[in-house]
Image 1: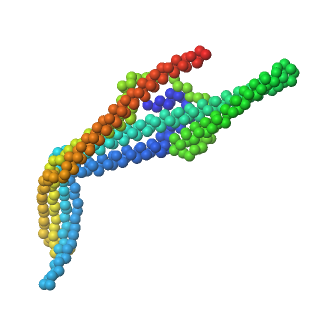
Image 2: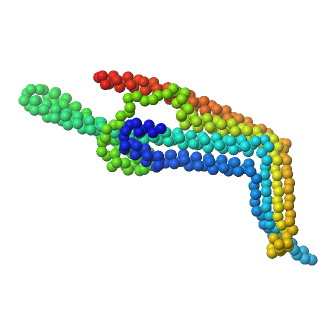
Image 3: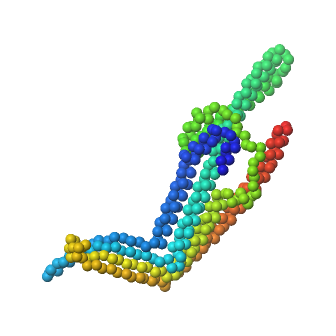
Length: 345
């Protein structure tokens, strides 16, 4: 949803395009998404058998004789997911990927708003400076006129001092406005991933302040919550932690490991694949935790408490989002009334 295009400002659109490609916070969020996806691949790989090639040589020496033995083959191992622990770990990793994607979206939404606000500040400061300069010019003319009238005896010295005071007050505002303008320019540059001052020339020429449309499409708060990346991220983190409880619970139950190997043995390296003897093994191992001083049960308790924390964080995020949405709607309605009153004035 390219909402900034409704402002019909080509410079703002160009700045936003530059920010999307250059902002450092956004690049960090993108890196975290790639990391989460890679981590999911690592965890998901544990659900499948592992196969490795092996080769070895040994030499035995006694007083009577000596012998050498060469071998080569393949080893395979597989832990069956009897109680769904590995499957739940994959679910947790997938939810964490989705949470990192929601975080990326949140960073992007915030970035676009920050660029637009910083750009608006630049244009507002430029407009205020232009207004102050025009006012100062008029006030200096009024000051000269007051001096001439005072010399002619038409007004008192108080009129001159009042005109001088008005000009000095306007002149005093201008350094503050210039500082605000420079700070806004620096903010725009940093949001674009550039050094402060790099957009000075691009935005040096004053331009009109972008005007928003008179009416905007405003939905109900519930639909707005569904679109908020922070709510989505909190929900996915809750789902990930729910799966982690399943991982910890599965560790309480037996595990079954299958191991097998095939290969050849020979007394010389040259005979290994010509006349070597074939060997193969297959073994299974069932393991059940019997005593670990409550370690596995405490691990489940840890994950359940983390689940409770994730649930509370989700609820807090939803409440905060509702507050921000309701406040925005109230401000939007009242600002319309404020604008209408200003127009009438």
